[in-house]
View 1 (cartoon, rainbow, N blue to C red):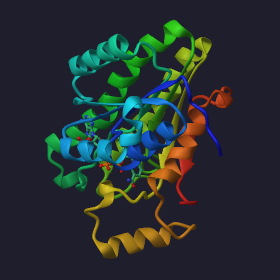
View 2 (view 1 turned 60 degrees about the horizontal axis):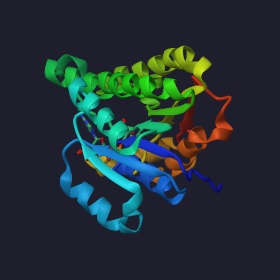
View 3 (view 1 turned 120 degrees about the vertical axis):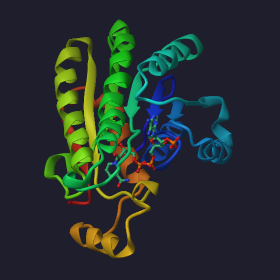
View 4 (view 1 turned 45 degrees about the vertical axis):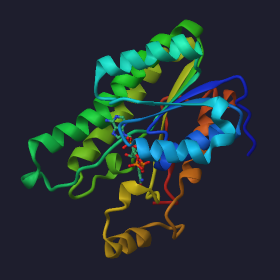
Length: 247
Ligand code: NDP
């Protein structure tokens, strides 16, 4: 599918590694300007910028912590001052810290909820303030099927991901009259650093659960995201698109 985002600007959080990197690259190839954000891995960001040198005029990298409301405010002020308008937010940053509930440290519960759920609120709240003025916008939040089906050892992650879906459904109703659509994309097992620590045996078991018999790639997720970000997806809002190989 050919996408054309010339003249549009997208903010992509977690946009320098993994799934977010695939999304940033797909937007760049489709002619968009992208402001890709990350938390602190400067090395990965530098390597990413290096391998996308040809797009350097269209790519801006910023680092901040999405859990910090003030930092998010500062970021959007920068975006308005430097880039003026943006039309698209893809909120992709996220973490997992696994443990069964009986053993979970309170801090690990909090960190995952803060990063995945409060981060979603922070990024979306300040984005809609901007998008409402222009009466157009596309917001896509990257959730996970784990929020729907649950997974032993991932109660914090599952709760945060289910929360994202509920948040998106509610927000979509608040901003629909301004022609802003808000949707989730829910990837299955995608081959990134995110699942890099999963033991090989466990990975084999995961693979057996996938009817298409392979892990997805960041590109597999990027194309559905670009579709939802396109003008043509105007009548889709409040929904979750699963990109799971049939999981
Ligand atoms: P990666 O670990 O490869 O990348 C995570 C990105 O999020 C990094 O850019 C990281 O920044 C950024 N990030 C993490 N915490 C923060 C924070 N507090 N503030 C700002 N940025 C932050 O993960 P994936 O690309 O695999 O996952 C991306 C999203 O997709 C997540 O929301 C995840 O839940 C979801 N997902 C992933 C699946 C998978 O199998 N990979 C399956 C289903 C959903 P930095 O580079 O500085 O560390």
